[in-house]
Length: 309
Length: 264
Image (cartoon, rainbow over all chains, first blue to last red; front, side, top):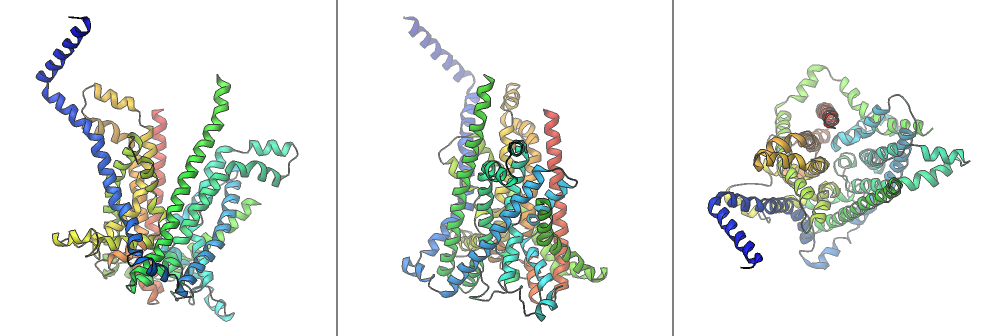
């Protein structure tokens, strides 16, 4: 017997022994090797049921009666009007909240003042308020019986049940998105680089455009796409202030509600497919940006590691 | 200057409108306020809203933990896609998820048709409300748990195993206590979000007064009947509750960070 064969037979003997002596231990080993597969299957099953199925049903219902019916849904002028109104509301609230988000994060990160943590909490406030209540507060202010109701009526200005109300409600619910992405990042970065730039003779705007903005650009974009998704899809708050006037104050989500309640299922899901597509693009961009930020962080880490060695 | 602008914009857009809500309630006497917020129809809506939100958040705590665990600990094909998909309820407008879920769970829907013979009515019942609230709450639990599970030290589990603990014991005695604050935070976030949810629920609930009518919808109904006082009173109750939850989440996170510092 060669030494190799000897060890092999020894191994076999050992295997034989363990399998004879401890069948339960082996059985438990075999069982626990199944655990990860089982858990993954359960997790995927839950997500398929709750996330993938709803996504699929939108597109399947939209194309149920074929491409022709699908595209016919968009020929309705009130559908177009809804798309236009959604784009207007988003187009106004997005830049406003972008400028505010950068300004707020700048003030919080680069300066010291009393009540900073209170300010951060207040900025997050719209996230804690139910969308219905967000709409309600504007009705209470600008509605016919609201604080400014009589004053507005005298001047023939309408905010509630009109476009300005929709824009205001959209601004309110998307208020924190950009700011809350930027505040932690800018706090972490501090103001050393800006101070260096200023001491070398840069103006405030120069230091902002050449130093601050490149440092925060991915986080800004991240906040903007989340803000955009919410602005386009907001339903509750806008529903309270809009008055649901077809072809006048209906945004896309509100138009979907009307079509669905009229049992116009294909048209409702055709409109919904637009928003679902927007949601999928948002997810893809978000994943890309997270990867990009991770990469940026790795490249900035590398030189410091090289210094250490 | 930026600070001044920040404060001005914040005051105009958020603070003045929100304080308006409270000032409006001051017009009511306490007895009137109490009558508005404790009428049987309103109380039934609280019961449904809080109950369904709680069950939804509890389902998410279990399955959210499972999903977060798989995403962090295991490598399998499709993991990245699954990770990205977790945020779908954030990205999909609530009205869209509302009609999609209703279509799936209604009598002739993909899943509803199999539940109907079992005597389970999913859409247009409280079960439907739970389904919608589970859908929108999932990302909160997964995204809060992921970093906590990443920070778990595998050594502690290995030590427990080498000391003779079985998997269940390791899970209950080592893993669960460490991630518990994060789990509770995720649960609270999902619960808070569910309390105020409107869009995804109104389609699937059927909106029967006293049975499947959530509080958010009741506020709208009162508003449409020009019962501003009633709507405002209920809104104040809901707002105070969500602020209380927000406050306890902040306390939880503080507790969480203190606990971590002690370990370090």
